[in-house]
Image (cartoon, rainbow, N blue to C red; front, top):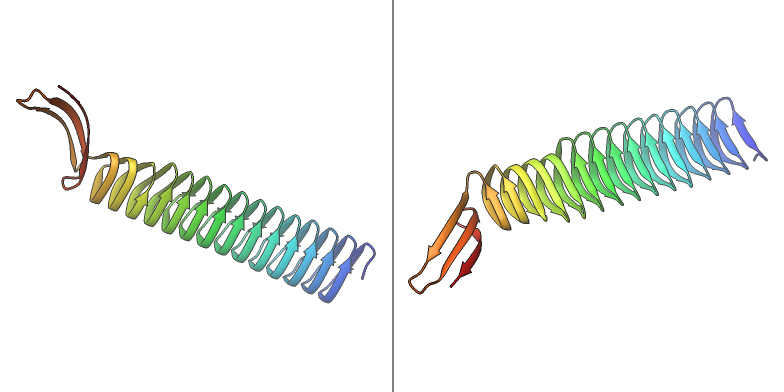
Length: 262
C-alpha cells in the first residue's frame, strides 16, 4: 500500500493499492488499484482499476476498469472497460467497452462496444457496435452495427446494419442501411434507400438501385441495370388515353414511372 506510488524494479504480484499509481518494471498481476495509473513494462494480468490509464508495454489480460485509457503495445484480451478509449498495437480481443474509441493496428475480435468508433488497421470480427462508425483497412465479419457508417477497404460478411452508409469492395450476407450501400460486388439481401453496385447476386431493395449487372431480383422505384430492362414506353388507346413511361428493373420483375393524359 502506498500513499503516492508503489514502484517495483522487477515484478508485482498480489494486491497493490496507491493514491497515484502502481509502477512495475516487470510484469504486474493480481489486483492493482490506483488513483491515476497502473503501468507495467511486462504483461499486465488480473484486475486493474484506476482513474486515468492502464499501460502495458507488452500485453494486458483479465479485467481492466479505467475512466480514461487502456494502452498496450501487445495483445489486449479479456474484459476491458474504459471511459475514453482502448489503444493497441496488436490484437484487441474479448469484451471491450469504451466511451470513445477502440483502436488497434491489427485485428479487433469478440464483443466490441464504443460510443464513437471501432477502428482497425486489419480485420474486425465478431459483434461490433459503434455509436458512429466501424472502420477497417481489411475485412469486417459477423454482426456489424453503427449509427453513421460501416466502412471496409476489403469485404464485409454477415449482418451489416447502419442508419447511415455501408461501404466496402465486397459485401456478402444481409445488409441494412438507412441511407446508402456502396460496393463493387454484393451477394445476399440488401435493403437501403440508395444502392450502387458493380455486380449484385441476390435481392436488391431500395428507392434507387443501380448496378452494371444483376443476377437475382430487384424491388425499387428506379432499378437500373446495364444487363436488364431499361426502356421508354409510349402507349395510346383508341379511347383517347395516352401515357409515357420509363421502365426499369429486370425482365421478370420491373417497375414503370409514367405520365398519362386523356
